[in-house]
Image (cartoon, rainbow, N blue to C red):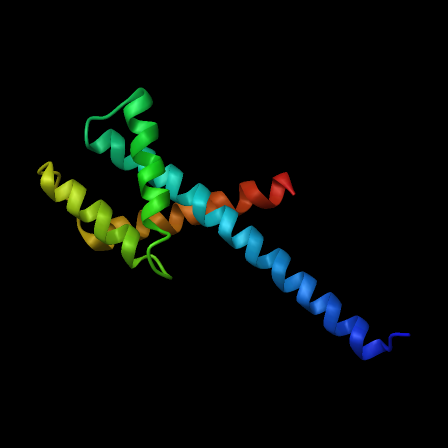
Length: 108
């Protein structure tokens, strides 16, 4: 037999897990979009651009937050001589995160 407290606790845990899953999906989608954008700046296209985008997703698994992605992308851009400020990169990441969240929520 369960009581109301247990039911509320379980519902809250399920909501938290669902929100975390959506956040993870949105971040992965944002990173893929970011990777494609950066790939274009690096002169990559087609399969090479998609591989680069996947490497950006993988970079995000190194540590919590976005610093791992920023470090990777900034280093790649610098290595190719592409002028990019961290501020501009983070603004683009924020824009892409909003797009990704909307897409993930639409998909359910």
